[in-house]
Image (cartoon, rainbow, N blue to C red):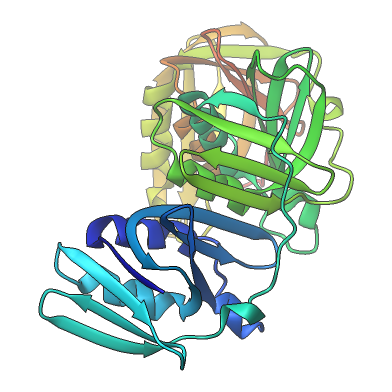
Length: 368
């Protein structure tokens, strides 16, 4: 292999494929990046057992070839090189020579013949989604993905589509986030579980401009973003029937400014020293909500104006969970709907965005 490419572009592309590399893998070659020449460009591939990312670097190819390089070492070297052109050359002993202006590196590579082969994924039926829309859907749900490895299905998000309406759903046992919208390209019904890490990686790759193409096979999801391709293994199992968890009616509903509520809760949580002790009490009355928190460090009182429909209520929440939901609702005003102080509440925007955040309350103790 012998080629020349731009240092800055190469560094950016290495960062993209490194998202798929798990340094804890027991397969040594999967700690590396596969470099190969294809269609007059340098192709970079990073993978673990669950996800594969491929991207291309426009290059001047003098000799075709392929080699596997340690991802961290290669990335660190290229990142530190001058902003110029990089020449990469291999020899018969799998040594890789990297030249850039006055810098010279020779590092040991591994034969690409031993790099695990991956079956290709049919891309004939791809669905186009506006990047800005998909970024919003991921942002507004991914924070509620479970981190409990004993429940692997909940470490992903459910993507379902029916009659052109798509929903992205995350649940962790304490809260549920659902973002729905119309996507015209979804002409078939879809129901798949995508790993949460993959969605977070996809979100970081999108600029918010243009569209991203998405396709599915029986076991994989494929995302095409310009010259970058992400293939991820779908999670197997049955996702929770989340629609049964959503209350069909409420006894109290309040309308209030989301920013004012968020600011008050952030101040009220300053006295908490740990997540377990991060509790706040909400006392809902005619035209105001009183937010209080009592800890060993002291107590705090906050008051937020609201419009009440229904009954008075005293209820308690983990403040972090409530704040995370509020931070991801892009609406000036919100509704919060309650049934009782031991049943889940529903937070949703007043505007027409189809978003629902369900949160379980915490049982109140006598000293709250």
